[in-house]
Image (cartoon, rainbow, N blue to C red):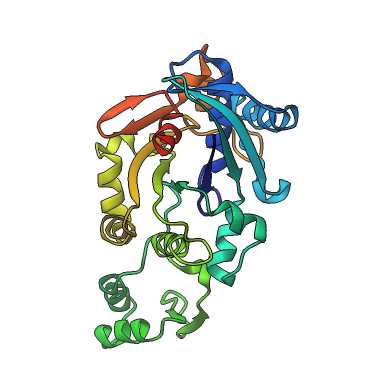
Length: 307
């Protein structure tokens, strides 16, 4: 039976890295997993080997935007023996940015967004926070405005513009035009989920796995994935708790598919990347945290969506 999962998220949210690590896990077979690989076409194996090789070498993935959207079809077997075909579109994050900024998307993307299972990727180190009125007031006071509250009200009453000042250089206020990409991460993600519950994307009840990627960057903060979501993305957390349509269910996963920092873009080696390349079992770089348990099994979010 064919089952479809769509991976969604803003640019550089970890979708391709997840897919690369998943392929390595399925083919390396050195770590116990809920799902196993049954078969794959040669063409898709070539693509997956390419991204998995870069993952194993601790090198950054080439941007999906440059190589085009890629739909991968895997034949998988569950730990209960059930075999099914999984369709996994690896869609560029720029496609979702375009949906937010231009309110449009390609037909192929629209088709993929009707999948019954949704993987929502959020990079914990790339969250763009909202601007708070209290912060605007404090900033206005530090810039020497006579009426800080009036200044903050002016910013709040003009959502398409922002006021900037450089007190050190004595420059006057500068009007900066607001752009859609300036919106906070959680605002864009909530709108993305709202779109999936409206025509032409609405297909009824779905399962949503929220994947907090690069979890290794926050794992020492002693917070669960659910608490991290509530603290850092409160609007999204509230929407997931109270705003999803009837029949939708969701679960939050903390996922470190990469393991640590890779070599930088200039090719300078990273000590952490060297350590990962020296690991005898690369799959052990993977860490998945969900509901108080931790494992190396990257198939957990996918398995939950398909249960």
